[in-house]
Length: 210
Image 1 (cartoon, rainbow, N blue to C red):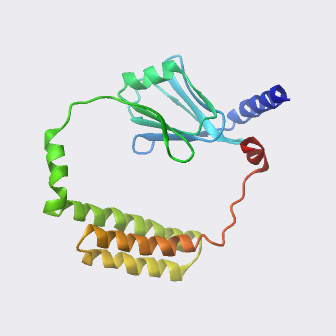
Image 2: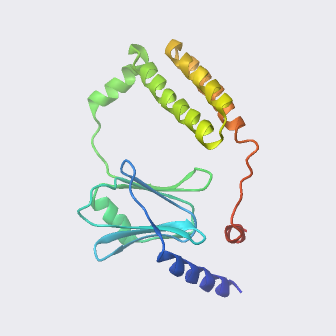
């Protein structure tokens, strides 16, 4: 029975591979997830594939392409070849394999000497106000994205305006704790808009996850 299921899964993966969407690095990062994940080398090219059910994604990256700096695999259903790990290492690209709960299962990456100036700047960031400035900027962008999501995705103008109100409070935040408080208030409104959304899973994926 198990062999029959395996053959059926392989047949499905081969069939859907012809209609796979292209995987492209975003800011140097490619993230693979789903079932039947594949990371291997063919004729000097790194071949990547992932997806759920018939919705597959794939990519073929040449040796001269320097766009990939980090490869992240989420899940444990699939294969990663040793030649693929060597391909990544030769290009100073890191590899990380994460479980579905976020825990790190494996990680590799280039080793570089420590940048003393960077370490000094990081140590002083809390004292000279740099950390607060960076925190404000990061949370401002996060709240702006949440505001767009509830307005465009959920058509909730009231939630968008409420998030915008808290976002405006960031300019007055005088500590990291105050920034975190603003972030928490925005998150409370954002996730409340998801409360009535039912998450549906394709029947094939439910059977595979069983």
